[in-house]
Amino acid sequence: MGRSVDEHVREVATLVRAAAQRRATDPPETVAVSAALAGRLATPVRSRLDVPGFDNSQMDGFAVHAEDLARAGVTPVTLPTVAHVVAGDAVPPRLDPGTAAPIMTGAPLPPGADAVVPVERTRPGDFGPVEGGGLVEFGEAVEPGTFLRRAGSDVEAGATVLEAGAPLTPAAIGALVVSGVAEVEVAPLLRLAVVATGAELVTGAVPDSNSSVLAAHAVSLGLPVTTHVVPDDPALLRELLDRLAVEHDVIVTTGGVSAGTREVVRQVVEGTPGSWFGHVAVQPGGPQGLGTVRSGDHDVPIICLPGNPVSVLVSFELFLRPALAQAAGRVAWRPSGTSALAEPLTSPPGRLQVRRGRLGDDGRVSLVGEAGSHLAVSYARADVLVLVPEHTTELDAGDTVEWWRIA
Image (spheres, rainbow, N blue to C red):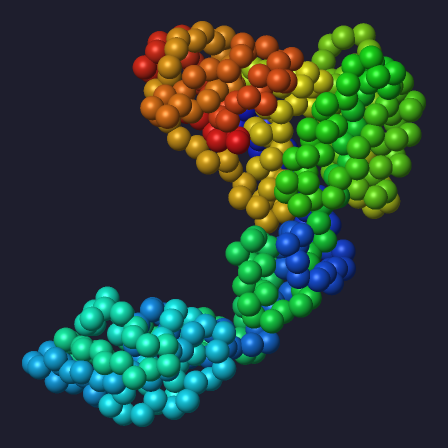
């Protein structure tokens, strides 16, 4: 029985979403704020600091009393300068009326000052002596509050920085650091297990690249992952799946899903609750499977991918990555676009063909390698996936194609 790509995307997403919802019922983990933080917040986070922590300058310029420049639009106003104020300084002395303080971006605003005039709007257009004693001419009036960053204008101490469920993106980590937050409660992350099948992998006759590929994808999403290799032995695979289900939330297998005589994954997983094995209308990666393994009071989903390296890579991008990325608080869909094809291609009818390509400096897409599902090195040289719709069998150079950015 066959499926469309969209149907299989939905089925995989449903299984992963259910696993994520079950995992979310586990107690949250208290984690130190660091560059390695991943996932989503379990509870809201409140700032420990005002951000910014003090009034400071938004520009390189001159801190002034706005009232001193009220007549500058009619007649230029000249003021003497005091010592320069730079970022990292302690709070500078109070600025007396009738004077101007050269100030750098991010430097604390002198008490009494209520505006900053950019240096390029003054004459002679420089800051004068570091210790002060220069003269600066202003040719226009300024409103109080101009080019100032007020303390707490981003967030005040005690206010919410991020709500529960917020993804812990690099920007979120930066917000936590600047808010003085040292620890956060993180929703439990989905735990993945990758199982590669085949005697040739156990013996080392064929390198097990699939486990490395899938584990690397999991790491890129911030998800914990373990990898395992098992021969074409149903009993050994069944025992391994039972064991992995205790400590993992999603199991991903590679190989053993087609119609051969030693399709061990299909033999073991077919017939489990919610299982399905068949062909999806895609090339490469047509043979796919789904199933479950029971662990305590719940079923752990098993996502069964084919064994050819490119089929695994394409299957992950189409079916698994969006759902896992959503659960992990990462951007679910790859950047995409359309471009002109640099060369002709042919595609089988009734299937979404996924080719590898590179975007040229001229904006055109060139194909990388042939359409074979074993060309792992060619895949690594590509920076986009080229998507040829199932109703398209031929494209000429210059025709428009859709692509997903993968590198």
